[in-house]
Length: 129
Image (cartoon, rainbow, N blue to C red):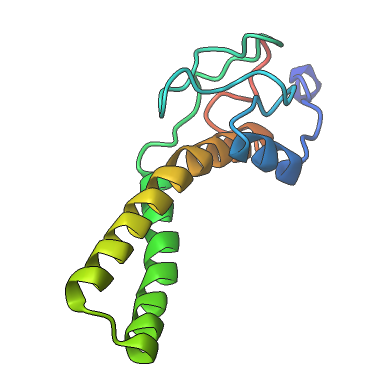
């Protein structure tokens, strides 16, 4: 029978994505989801929500490249056309800025992607258990 299937409660997407962005558990919002820079815990230490189902794979890296590239490329052109700094100075400033922004965004985008997958009950997050 179709009624035998367990209906899961609807999960709010944006609060879960925001919790993931903050690198917190998408379920309780207080437990850390990362055990290192990019390593995801098997489960939340606070609410015991299983987190190993995530399939973030290369998505956070692609999103990081997309955001950093679309921000830094026009900024590079504006800075160059406005102030005409020496090429080595321009390269140094933008290299450091690009690396710093990438390192900042990568774990946050991974957390947001995990929060999105949890909210949409993707890849086993919706299984009763």
